[in-house]
Image (cartoon, rainbow, N blue to C red; front, side, top):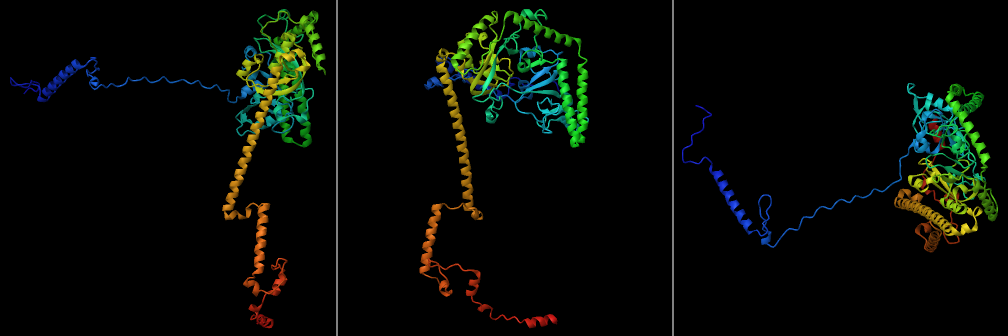
Length: 610
C-alpha cells in the first residue's frame, strides 16, 4: 500500500475540522461588531489592530501622554586640584644649566615643557637655608641631586647604591621618597644664596615667610624686568637687554633662537635655563675635587675606612667628566666666542647711543624721592627705545632672582606716575607693608599676563609696598580709595583668619573638656577608679568639714557602748577621743585572753635534748 497516496474523502463532507469552522465563524462575528463600532464612532479613530475607543460614550478620555523632560546637564565645577607631580615640581622650582648641543626651541616658547634629564649639566637651587645630606647630616660634598629632587653627597649616595641587595639591578629606592635612583641620573648642584632683602631679620622670620625670606617691614631691592610676548626670556632692563636687532643680525642668522649662556648679563639670577660652556663646567668640577679632598682628609682623620673607597670612586667620576669636557666640538667653542663678541658689540652700541639705566635709590623724604624720580624719568624718556613693541611686558622682580613681584595695584600707581612702562626706574628699594604668597595657576597666569614665562606650580610672592616714597601726593590722592580698600580687605582677611583660629582653638578645648568629663563620669561610676576621682572643691570641702564637726559633737554628747566600756583616756577640745600612740594603746588593752598560755622554757630545752 502506498503511504504517499492521498486519503479518501467521501463526497459531501467538509475537510476542515469542526473547531476551525467555529473559529472562522467567531472571527466573522467579531469583524461585524467592529464594523458596527466604526459606524458608531464619532471621530472614526481606530488603533493599529482596528479597535475602536468607546470613551466618548462615557464622556471620559485619558489625558495626553506627556513627554519625558530632557535631562538637565549640570556643568562640572572647575577645580584647581592637581595630583602631585615630581617632574612638574622640579621644573617649577629648579633652574638648569643645559648642554650646549641640545635643541630647546619648545622650552623657549612654553615654560611648562620639561627638560630631558640627559641634557641637564647642572641644577641651580635658590635657598637661604644651609643644605645638608640626609645620609650623613653634614653639608654635602660634591653635591648631587637625584631625578626626584633630593640632594646628597656624591660619596654617600654611591655608598648607598652599592648596598643594594640585588647587585644586578642598577637602581635603588630613594631613602626619602622611595623613587628609583640610578647612578647615571645624578646631576651636580649649585646653591644660590638670596640677597635681595636689605634689612633681613633672621630672628623674626615667621613660618609664613620662610619660602621667600621676606617679612613685613623689610626693604627689598627690586629691578625692572622686560619680557617679549613670544618668548620666556625675562631679564632686567639695562644697556645689554633687550638686545638690539641690528647688532645681533650682524653675527647670527635672523631665524636663530636666542638662548642665553651662563655669562649673559643677568642669566645666573633670572634665566630659568641657560647653556653651560665647557670652561664653566670644568671650574665646577674642580670645585668638587677640592671638596672631595677635604672629605678624604676628614675620613682618614676619623678612621672611616669604609668611606675612603667611595670618596676615591667619586674623584674618579669627576676626573672622567673633566676629560669628557676637553673633547668638546669646535661648534660649541665657536658659539661661545660668537656670543662674547655680540655682548661686546652691544655694550659699545649702548655707550654710543647714550643708554644708561635709571636708578631709584632709597630716600628718607617722599618729596625728594618724587623730584629725583621725575628728573630720572625725563632722562629716561630721551634714552629709551622709541620703536619698542607694544606687546612687551614690564614688571618688577627681586634683584636676586627670587619670585618676588610687586602687587598689581602698585604697578598701576607707578604707571599713572611715570606714564609708560619703559619710563619706570630701573631699580627700586621699597619697604614691604604686606606679603602675600601664592602658587601659579592658570587663573593667576591669565590675571597677571606678565608671569607667562613662569611654569605652573611655581611659588610666587606679591608685595604691597609703601608707594609714598616714590610717587607724588597727587597720584596718591587718585588711588587713595583703592589703597584704603586694599588695607581694609587685608585687615578683614586677618580678622577672619583670627576668628577661624579662635574657633578652632575653642572647638579643640570643648573636645578636650568633653573627653575629660566622659572620663570623670566613667571613674565615678566604676568603683575600680574610685581612687582616681578628682579632688573636691574648696566650698565642698568646707561643707563636709562642718558636717563632720557637727557629727563629732553629737557623738561626744552621746557616748556609745564601746566608748563606755573602753577605759577613759585623753580627750580633744571637742570632746572626742584623742588619737594615742601604739604603746599607750597596748597598755589600755586587756590581756586576759592570754593568761592560760604558759611557756616553760626548761621543758622546751629538755625536749630538745631528748
